[in-house]
Image 1 (cartoon, rainbow, N blue to C red):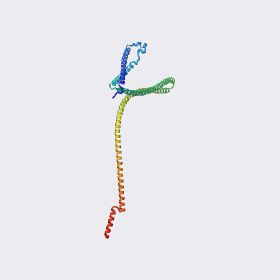
Image 2: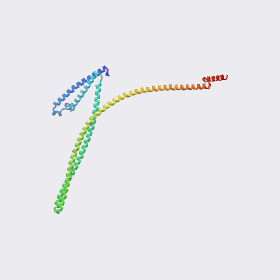
Image 3: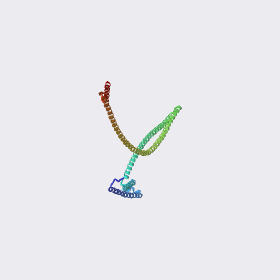
Image 4: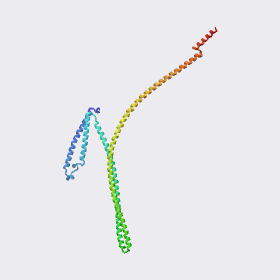
Length: 334
C-alpha cells in the first residue's frame, strides 16, 4: 500500500511522535520516582502525628491508585506511539492507530452495556430490598399488635383472678353449690385464656419462621438473579459473535448474488439484442416474401388478362387456327 504522506510530512510526523515518546518516557521516570517516594513516606509516617499534618503532606488516599492508572495509560500510549512509529517508518501508513481507535470504541460500547445492565440489576435489588423492608415493617407491626393483645389478655386474666378472689371471699358464705359453679366458670375462663395465649405464641413462632424463610428466599432469588445476569452477559457476547458471522455471511452472499445478477443482466442484454436482430431479419424476410407473392399475383393477373385479350380478339395462336380453317374451307370448295 502506498504511503498517503509525502517524505517531508512523514518526517515531520515521525519527529513529533518521537518527541511524544521521549516525553512519555520522562513522565514514566518521574511517576516511578513519585511512587517510590510515596511508598517511603507511607512506610515512615508516624500515626500519632497524622492529625497534626496537612493534607498535602500526607497525600490523597486515592493518589497511589490514581498514579497506577496514569502509569498504565502512559504505558498504553507509549506502546501505541511506538507501534505507529514503526509502521510509519516501515510502510508510511497509520493502520495500527486506526485499529487501536476501533478497539477502544468497541471496548467503550461494551463497558457502557455492562454498566447499563449492572444499573438495571442494582435497581431490581433496591426494589427487592424495599419490598423486604416493607415486609419486615408489616411483620413488626403485626407482632406489636399481638404483643399488645397478649398484654391486654394478661391484664384481663389478672383482673379476672382478682375478681375471682373477691367473689370467692364474698361467696364463701353462700352455698357450696354456688362456690362450685363459680370455680368451674373461672377455671374454664382461665383455660380459654391460656389456650389463647398458647395459640398466639404459636402464631408468633410461625410468623418468625415465615419471615426467616422469606429472607432466605429473597437472598437465594438475589443470588439467582446475579447468576442469570452473568449468564445473560455470556449469552449476549455469544449472540453478538453469531450475528457478526451472519452479517459477514450475508455480505458475502450479497456480493455473490450481485455478480450473478450482473452476469444475468449481461446475458439478458445479449439475448435481447439477438432477439431484436432475429425479429428484424424475419420482418425483412416477410416483407421480401410478401413482395414476391404480390409480384407473382400481379404477373398471373397480367398473364390472365393477356390470354383473355388474345382469346377475345383472336390474336396470337388463336388467329392462326382461324386462318388455317378458312384456307381448308376454300380448298374443299375448289
